[in-house]
Image 1 (spheres, rainbow, N blue to C red):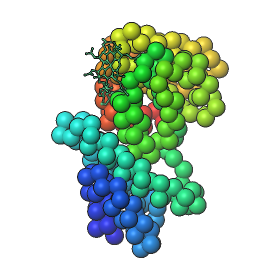
Image 2: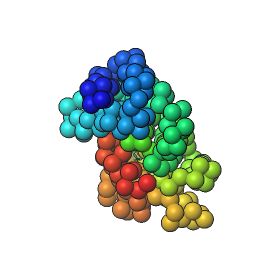
Image 3: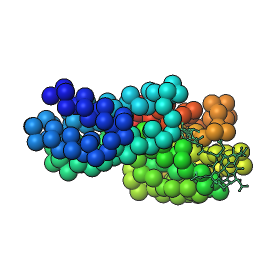
Length: 210
Ligand code: B1M
């Protein structure tokens, strides 16, 4: 059993989506539970890639292909997991703030969070503060993730934090922030709940909030 799960992890790290899909199907037909395949195959591989990304041992393209393989493998497991009654660890919404169209980093954060079993609803780019609030209520999430890449749009994160603080979900939802110009000092200054400098740390931090 360990062998096929190890193979899934390895092929995922190498971005071999087709092979991952095939191996996940084979593991299911061998009677391995979907949860075990997810934890010890897919998530294990994504965790290794996350660690290597953090240590600058692999870069954006490798993470993107690994995440694609992860998503393809997870698609095979989804109906089985639903039938086994396994639900996601928790839910979050993510978006790039109003006025900002950069989404490569945000997409990586989303993929890493999904790689940790967090269902992540993507609001896209140029997201107004009120949309973050609406979506958080609509999906009943416990975490809002805001990305900003421009010094001119960083201030929008503060607007999101203020909108949430003034809403009826204040205290029930955490706000995590990040993006190239964003720092821990900025996070403290605007009263956000958490900051992460990169996608792998963002997924780790998100897990503590979920
Ligand atoms: Co733009 N851009 N851009 N750009 N762009 C930057 C950000 C810039 C630094 C380039 C420069 O001048 N040196 C500069 C900002 C300067 C500043 O504000 N001080 C800039 C500018 C000025 C602009 C325009 C204004 C240019 C113009 O039109 N005159 C314009 C603005 C458009 C807008 O948004 N309204 C613009 C447009 C664009 C493109 C559309 C061409 C394109 C974006 C394409 C896309 O995203 N789909 C683009 C790009 C690609 C860049 C650079 C080259 C690369 C950004 C990137 O994707 N990095 C960038 C220069 C650079 O950074 N070298 C630049 C890779 C990505 C993986 O990193 O997004 O930082 P990053 O994400 C990291 C972390 O920050 C963190 O995790 C990620 C992975 O580790 N992270 C989070 C991100 N979000 C997080 C959220 C979290 C936690 C961590 O929690 C929720």
